[in-house]
Length: 242
Image (cartoon, rainbow, N blue to C red; front, side, top):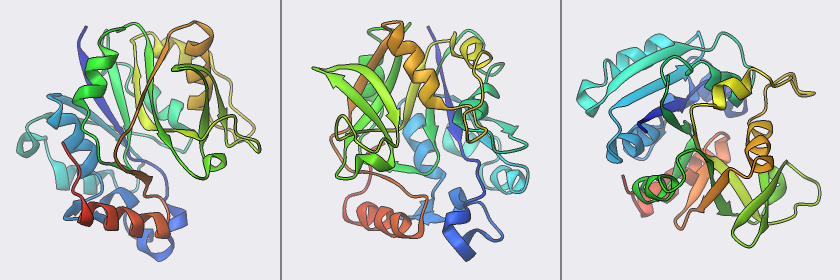
């Protein structure tokens, strides 16, 4: 079964203060490149040639000007506009026609990590009808979605729990089979008014179709001023592997 790449690069970036007054946070520098180059290089480094980028209305033109058709990055880029913030699952739903009949590997555009994708994809290929999530051991799991584990099996995911059941955060790397788009259509908005990716993941867990892989190298969400600084420090000290 074929697989296509999806980069989610929307959001207002309000936690970045003045840095995102006139630009999208995914266009800010991390190491020697704009942030959005990191997920794109991860996907093309793993051999993907069909990539969709989802962003908001304000700065889509900037992404097109920067990345163009994808030719310079050895891929074919498609763009979709997310008119309003509605959650990760809503943004992923915009990829339905792009991924028709294919699996999707979904990367959050502000996640910076060391590991290449090839070993993760090879593991996921063993169960192509499953969903797969990336995990990383963190000191502050209550800030993230947290995986409850039984051995190496995921038995539940909680979003920002007060009492985390593990220290394994769900990072912004997801692999889904084609039926994810039908599932998203059945979701109801959460109290935040968004379609939650945690609800998608828990559906596959209940079906017994959820796998996971742990990242060995560094990982950070570069969505705040402090974490952007941290991401730049990590990348300078140890360049990511694509």
